[in-house]
Amino acid sequence: MENIFNKEVVGKVIGRINKLNSKSTALWGKMTVAQMLAHCNVPYEMVYTDKHPKPNGIMKFMLKLFVKQPVVNDKPYKKNSRTAPAFLITDERDFEVEKKRLIDHLTKTQELGENHFHNKESHSFGPLTKTEWNNLFYKHLNHHLEQFGV
Image (cartoon, rainbow, N blue to C red; front, side, top):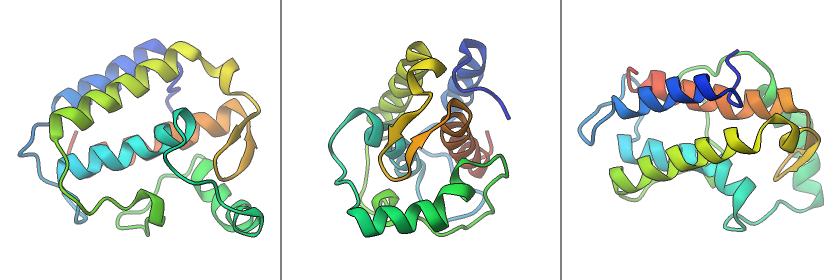
């Protein structure tokens, strides 16, 4: 799996994002391209903002038990996988705004680096290793860029 903390990898990912436009259509799924970009911003919002309420103890335990491994392992997501409620984007979004936010999040994450994230507490899963953070970030973004053919 590519390393999202590597500057060259982030450059390639940003290049893929820049191939999208407001009329790009998905090869599968229901989201518009602007909704997809907003959806891809959610993991970064969970790291950098307090926008999303943290799950309570029981819910966090369930997330660790049933959701964590598929999210942080290196196996690609299947097409049309279920989306967690916090990640559902159903309203209209501004393509350019969401694109800029995602690129800014990627740049900030790469600049902070893997050591910043190693053993950092995640919103839903407790502490994650730098590899788990990388998998969480890169795998999700790659899945959705592939969804839109870039």
